[in-house]
Length: 126
Image (tube, rainbow, N blue to C red):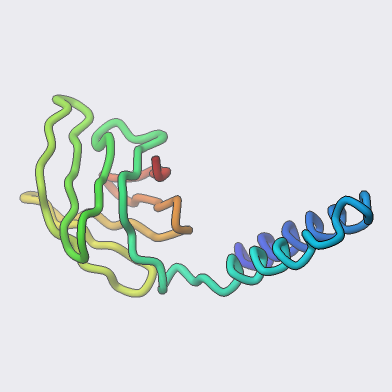
């Protein structure tokens, strides 16, 4: 469902861009087409998280910083303290280990992950 919505949106953008001003778009349609193909080819299963993802609407965890292949630093939103942990990747899901229970995140794109349970909410890459 999400992929088809993205594909239709990109197709609409591509079509509008090509018909809007043909003289200005000559030579640029190739790069736009390559960008669209790259987006459609990248599956959440293929994405390795890296960098800092900041919570948009979560009150328990302020951010997650992914370092390397298994390390994540979680910033607590209450005290602002960082604590390192590790995570496992299973297809398009990330399971982050904490001392109480695991946190589950779904990879939406290279710049967005979605938390469930205690980590519920969207996390956007800085």
